[in-house]
Image 1 (spheres, rainbow, N blue to C red):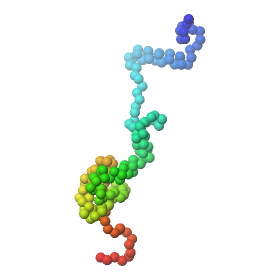
Image 2: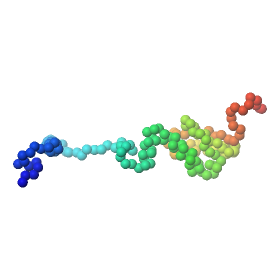
Image 3: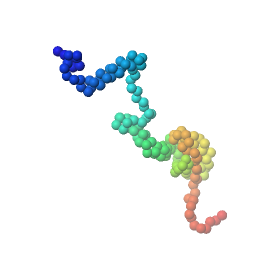
Image 4: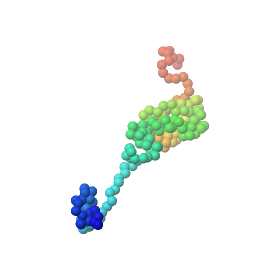
Length: 159
């Protein structure tokens, strides 16, 4: 009995059989020319993946944040949330972050002595914060001490 694709078969080859034959002929011609057959290479572009490809939850969130340009805001929120771990519990008891805009971090100290201490520690704080957020994220630290809030009091001032 003749099997499919044998010489004695009377039926015409199907489309898939014709494709297999064409591929076999192309491979044979490549071998005759001296070209080595190569397997197709998949090029991966870093952490980006197809939307349907499974990935770790943290990687998916990180990719989503990058797509929307929110990674810096989230990192800063993380710094505010972990302030005591970043600067140490002693300093965190007396100094807290208030705002971060355009590379400037504003911190508030609970006494003039702590404000002075933080001003002296500014280079170390900058280095540590940039380690957490990425180099150049925090360009300056502004220290506010205690006292009356600045701004629109009355017209009269005592000097």
